[in-house]
Length: 268
Ligand SMILES: O=C(O)CCC(=O)C(=O)O
Ligand SMILES: [Fe+2]
Image (cartoon, rainbow, N blue to C red; front, side, top):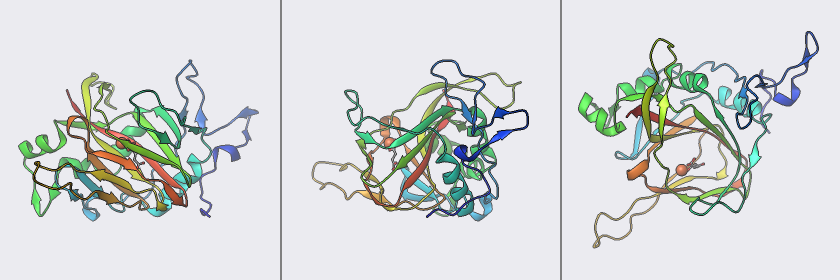
């Protein structure tokens, strides 16, 4: 039973002042196919980079940051996100799409992506990479991230998996986009995504994100999958696009799995 938080659920927000209907969504831009942006709760008490580690799970492929968000912030977000209009994805995907059965909400929100990036430790951890006891130089960083990192993709996806739901095996594509810096004086920058960001807000039984590395050569047997268990407030980054590993979100057995998904963007 998630504890109640300071932040109201969308369904709990009542009429305010002059009788206008307040909700967790900012309904201004209601053109067709444009989803209203949520009024996200503030990102309070974010741990600083000095207290966190970018931990390699699989060299050059999978990294995690434990305690990226506090459990308090994760809980208050779950409470907030529960009030958003999540849609259950269809069981019959289009040809070529992975079978994905979860409830999701997707919104284009550059402001929130920017907050997730620079008010948290992520920017600093990505810009000053310290892995395996060594600080990466500029060339090594370009190689690791696939280019000059600009920030997070404004395409924010929220996933909720209840028991029985899963995300079948697939590869994440790299997407080309236009990155809009928060400073309006800087022109939009042609960009592409290179790494997937998954932020787990809850832990559950099952629901692991499992990766399937390929054998280096024919003589080698198939390597064991790399299985990452859900952990409250943990961020996971994995390389995507051409070098993406086959991966899946395994079926949730007990509890509810909540994830916020975005991507690292680099200059194109
Ligand atoms: O939910 C997960 O564990 C995996 C999600 C995923 O693979 C994706 O968003 O592409
Ligand atoms: Fe994926």
